[in-house]
Length: 300
Image 1 (spheres, rainbow, N blue to C red):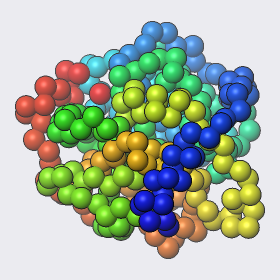
Image 2: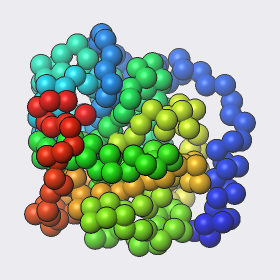
Image 3: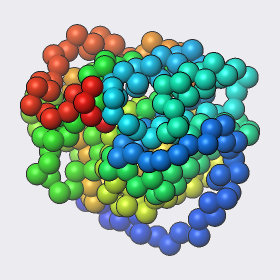
């Protein structure tokens, strides 16, 4: 881990280094389109799933509940597995109608190809131009008022022009001095931290986040996993590094999403040592959304 001053210089170099021209067809061709969506919405919801259709159906229902009557464009990126997602896809179509884009990977992407799934999500964001985007993994649980709580907390940082990310997951295993960046976290209030890092369980961003990253991912080379297969996908790390020094990243504590009830598909060895199970925080006090201007039935 680098000292923050060294890391700031490194992050700027990483963010600004020349990139090869993005060939969008190379990414679209990784997936088979299962639905033909129409229209757009101010909120883009990106859902990643692999090999757990039953758990994913619970996430779909929870997302529908937290959206209420608000329209959202829902993108599902389903990595190839032996599991049958027919019922899950049918339920998603019933819940989200014509604003659902469901993409099935033609081949297994796994950890080495996880960054490519995010590149597709960034491409959809460039087309849709949402005001905000909500990213969710398929092994989470959250309450129907989650989105209203997100917006309440988001509004508390409205005076920060560099605010780009609200990380919705937290646990008692989080590092006080930062993950991937050496920045001691700062308590903003009883429910918000300034961390300058985030991971992929669940996060909320604005359009300026995508613009900051030029709607593109930096490729992650396969060499990362050849010697150490247990390494994570590194997507959260790369997004953190590229944001560092150019964006402010906040974290909710208590968490707005719960994790740990479903076995890990991508990192079973790592999760055996560090579970990131935050379900013990489920009884944490809730954010007061009475003055937020958005609720689960009136709206992200």
